[in-house]
Structures are given as C-alpha cells and as structure tokens.
Image 1 (cartoon, rainbow, N blue to C red):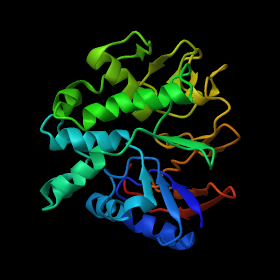
Image 2: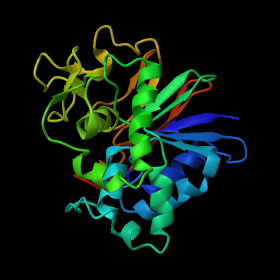
Image 3: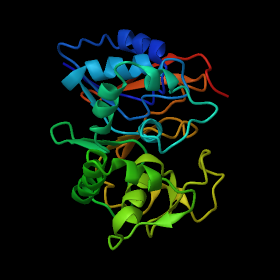
Length: 272
C-alpha cells in the first residue's frame, strides 16, 4: 500500500493517467492526495473531475483557486474567462452531482499517522495546525450551506490584506480563503499579497514565501502544497511543493508519503 500526493492537474487528464501508470497505482491498495486545481486551462477538465470523483475514498482532495472558480461560475456569480476550459463541466448531464461532490471537499487535510498536512496554496504564519483546521472548517461550512452563492461574490479580492483573528463575516471568510487557495508571499505579521505570482526574487524585499517566514507556527509540520508553478520543486523537512507546471509544458509530479520519493512525467504545453 502506498500514498501518493499529486500536483495541480488543471484538466490534464491524459497526463494524470500516464503518471498513475508510472507509479503503478492500484486503487484496491493505494491512496491518492490531490493538492487542488483539478480543473481548468487544460483540455479535459470534465474527464479529470469525473475520474477523481469516482475514486471515492481512495482520493483525498483539497480545493484550489480554479476549483473555487468553477463553483462560482456554476452558481452564476463568477464569469468564465477567455482561457477557461470549464464549459464541458457546466454542460454535462451530471454537472450537479460533480459540483456537489466538489464543494464538499476540504480546504485542508491532515493525516496524523503519516505526519503530513495538505493545502492548495499556504497558511498564515500565526496559524498552528489546530487553528488552521478550524479556520478551514469555517469556510467549508459556508460552502456546504445554502449561503454559498453569497460567499462566492466576496471570496476573492485583488487587494492586499492581513489576517487577524478579530475579523468577522465575509471579510474573515475571504482572508481565510485567500490563504488556503491563493497566497504565495506574505509578511511575518500575517499580511499578504496576491499581486506577485512569479518565483521568489521578483516580489518586494519585505515579502517572503509563506513557508520561509521566521517563527511560522507550523514550521515543524510537513506541509504539501501546489498552486505555485513558477516556484519549482521544494522538498525539505518543512514543505513539499508539488505544482511542477504540467499545464505549462513542464511536468506532472507525484510524491510518495510513505517512503519519500518522486515520480515525474513530461507534459505537452497547453497554456502559454
């Protein structure tokens, strides 16, 4: 039995199947962790979503920003962008079943026996494991409620912001969601920016990658994440970065949690 974590797929279904063959995945014995962004920009978002949904308990998925985008568009709140490849899902006869399954995925997963946590993007520096799981649950409860559409209208902002445990209402939910689904760089005081998307070095000097912040509360906890395709591979005792840019013509990667090792396959370029 093996547990493999897999980077951002973004609708690259054929490459996912190739990677699963490379790791000799056996659904009767093995488990898969997906860091989010199952869909969008790649050519086969519908096939990817159906396949992972059908894996049932064999697959553990956390929500990424493109998954949130799909839910918002389907609810009539968000709008499709020129490069989106979500229309086949929106037109599918089983769209409601797929969307209901997706919105019941968590923002964070932790496995005590394996000793790993998983998020899509990052965590606020002041959050320890217990706090992070609690904040994730706040957003999850709204996603699974009749008030989800209201949340979709405010879940993203293009302004920099700061975490504080005194935040309330939709502002609080948005900042929590930004950390789990969008953050790359932030400040030691919990302020972050969503403006800088390139590799480290291009951001203002006072900002650091969220996982490099001094005195980060989860520094002793190995965290698997994706989201940051320009970052490249990071694999140390603190974090494992899994988005190796399959969508951009680089690689789709799998990381084994039981006996740490990597398997990667080359991908064609679907996006520029």
